[in-house]
Image 1: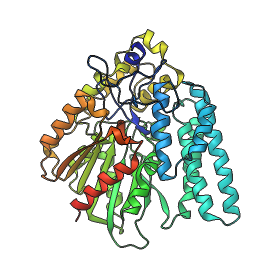
Image 2: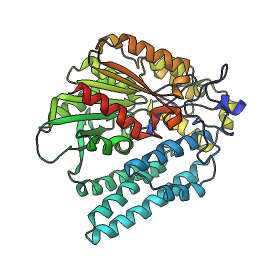
Image 3: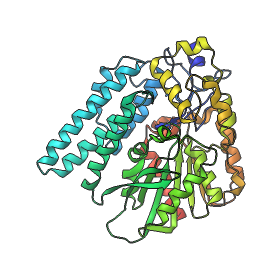
Image 4: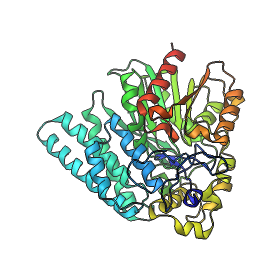
Length: 440
């Protein structure tokens, strides 16, 4: 159990994406996974809770790497982001817990898929090219997990990832549009896909992620389900996400400010119905979205997976924040690099994970000031945490609109972990069935 106690949690998907789970689990920050084997039982009394403990072993013994493989990687299969054969081939060549082989194998796989896409496009086979490009982009995105921003390949691969997505976009019908929103001297990059061709205003879902998220993570998280149900889909990198910290744009307590720019863009489009605009946030986005709704009545409904009422007490209790130098030295390179990258995204020195707690003061929202319909989704495994339960209760008790609901997705259907990335079909069912009723 010692390895498990020492495991640290960081913000994940809060890519994807990262986000978290804390000692008592958080939805803003969290991977875990250190030098040892998977702990037997998540949420045991008296032991630190790890929402990144999947409860099953997908492939790796390193819990952090296994979480990313089982949820972020394999979970994307339903949305055309991965093929099982490709994924398990790459995994077979990765050294357990080793950041370098993870980065190399996913990138190699991505370049092979891109080459197949280029060959199909040259031959006029647009559907084949589109499908290959989607997976190529996602594999290159996956290769960035555990890569430090000081590595020159980080920027290069981020640019390549976006370039492949832009090659894929016009091959969809309607196309997937790449856009950039001017914001404080830089741009917030993102993607938009109409529900149908034309300019008829339609229902729209804006999705944002958490601590390690790239906009592409959210595309592979829910875009196909969104389109199948007749909603426009929009996602974007906020400060702290994607490659924006390279430009000095780290996370900030007033995430409602960049969110306002996102809503301005959405409502500036003729194909967005202003009366049916919803926002959904997972991991850290479970705090960013309700905070935005407090300040912006143009958001007509919100969903969170799960609600982060106050990030500070979550971070304060995280093993990564309280870890000793001896414990830090025991971390695998994969886990250690993720912790450093999360620090970077919060503007904290990468060798000072204890600084994540004070850096998260002010990341909060007041449920009583959220007046729109609100949905909370939380995986059963993550809900074992007393702190997660406490924050969901505060949110649900405080939300002012009677159209509020909490749904705990079940472990016996493989929908239990942080952000429920391992069963995205259930997320689509719960979210859109609820939104359909709200917008009826």
